[in-house]
Image 1 (cartoon, one colour):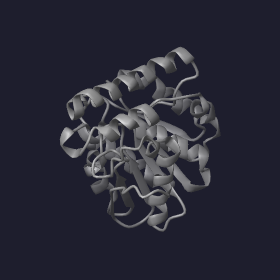
Image 2 (spheres, helix red, strand yellow):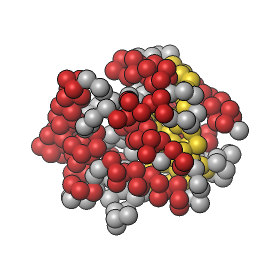
Image 3 (cartoon, helix red, strand yellow):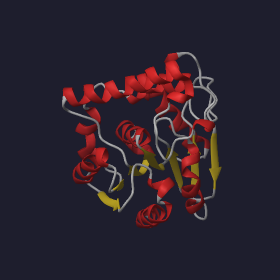
Image 4 (tube, one colour):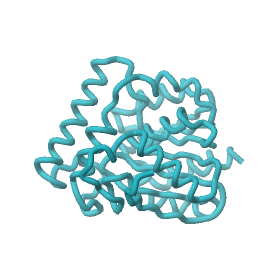
Length: 247
């Protein structure tokens, strides 16, 4: 593991739940979630490199899916746990899928919040990558003023736009279809949550719930892209019910 400092907050005691935020967000988005988990779970909320209170190296090589997965495993190890429920929002959900596929023995459960499984279609993937590159260019030219909008995003939690731009170019972009192709091989019980108004992710959420063998889908009515922030009560109810099922 490299020397990049990763900020994390650990609360509660019990089975570990690792909470991974989305692109340009931070662990702040899980404040309500952590409080709901802490009575009987160990909740670990962390900031990706370049985000929040984690280091934001100038070196682009610090930003890759493999390195981010290594950070996730290190946080679980640091809690003294063999396994964790991996809960991810948006990009964090995609990384949680990557972890479940690469290290299934370390994953007790998967919670996917307004995320997608990637693309088989090259044209669709190119469109996604063009969007990610546009994010990077805006951040490089405008600094933190180039942040995209979203209920879970706050310019004030980041120290630099450099790491966000590197993340957009090197982690948010996708290169193949291995995640979507691997959905049927995920053996961990999975909860898929999506806001009814999050149009870009509704179809993908239904698709994932149909392809992962032990998956259930929860749609939160009137909700957009960030249920833990805008609709914490129904989100936490669904999450707690899922975790009770794991017992």
